[in-house]
Length: 163
Image (cartoon, rainbow, N blue to C red; front, side, top):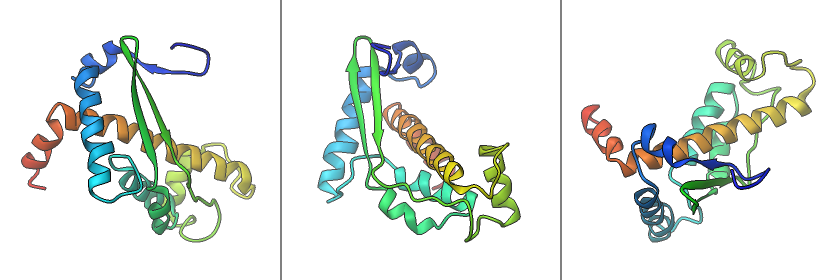
């Protein structure tokens, strides 16, 4: 951490947990998220925020069509000292805690895992908690996905699972 509000991914976590180094990860970020997104004509600069949001929305009874707006996100990877600063900007995360598919048994169960003590009749706090959880899921996916792309384990997994 370089300050009270700036959190870093330390070099040790990158090497020991994700099997990458800062230099290679930044190179992959530029190639995939910046150049690749631009060449593809995307307004967004991320690896797969839409996938994380769609999965989250389906699991919690949200409208998965909102993944379209939510996917217009930008992820930033910057070298800071020996570590890495990572930020995800999600301009649109549409969630609701009542209506739609939110009351289906499995979706209600998933929301209860995210908000174990929530009173589902008070939706303002519940919606903020759901939006934060969706952001965390997307953020985690961006870090682990880009690391997997960098260390070739993403390609290996796709080949092994025939996808």
